[in-house]
Amino acid sequence: MKFGKVEHPENIDFSLPKTHTETFRLLAKQEKLLKPSVYVGCAKWNKADLKGFYPRGTKDELVYYAQQFNAIELNATFYRQFNDLQYTKWYHKTSKDFKFFPKLSQEISHFKQLVGVKDYVNTYLENALYLKEKLGTIFLQLHINFSPKNFKDLKNFVISWPQNIPLAIEVRHKDWFLDTVASSEFYQLLEENNIANILVDTAGRRDMLHMRLTNNEAFIRYVGANHTSDYDRLDAWVKRIKEWREAGLQNIHFFIHQNLEEASPLLASHFIKKLNSELKLDIKIPDDRNNLNGQLSLL
Image (cartoon, rainbow, N blue to C red; front, side, top):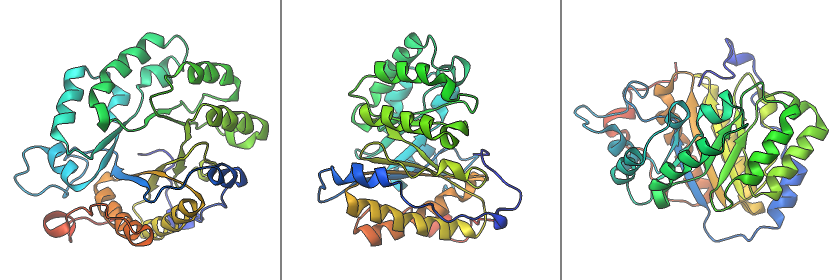
């Protein structure tokens, strides 16, 4: 992910903002179950991006990836529509507890910007539903030019979205964060329709760390800078997630990107170890005996 990339990450203040007060209000109303639902993964599984991750002789990258992680942020679905046969193949290649978190296609979010997209959405969902119980939250990443002026189009889209299919939304235009009226209307729309408000932690867009959850799901897209500070940033997220968990958070979906994606599994391994320790979880830690140990680096 190149979005938010900066030339000198050492000059960025990576500290996490305080939690939005409305987030605590929302979490206080949630039923706190004994064990949270936690999924952690990368954005891609192909060998070209995750160099050094796969042991020599790996025949099927997705099969191996799904043995190491319990989730994938499925960005491939942004670039093209996949048919039911492809989703079915992905379903059968992954373990029973694995989940896919697919991105809505750019035809919907960028080219048509939510206008006249009913048929595209229906086709997308008809095929994606072949993932069955392995379908996680679908997410919509809106074009950076999609501003609060387009709120009516967003509202129409949200209202028409099937309530039984989890959805998360990421906005990028700066006015969503600078205009308090626009942000308030946006948060209210998501909360009323049980839609997750995506948090993006990337160097060049610190405004996207709004810390405002709109349902009982923290959908976090973390973008490392291929810098040693990446580890401290992840440690800070573990502390914040623990705080939210104690406040009532039940669903945690955390996806790790890098400007150079090959280091993503390394960071994910570090994050999972810390999260397991703090939240008393048993999420599988990616195997580092053959690949992560000494073969991947941040720089």
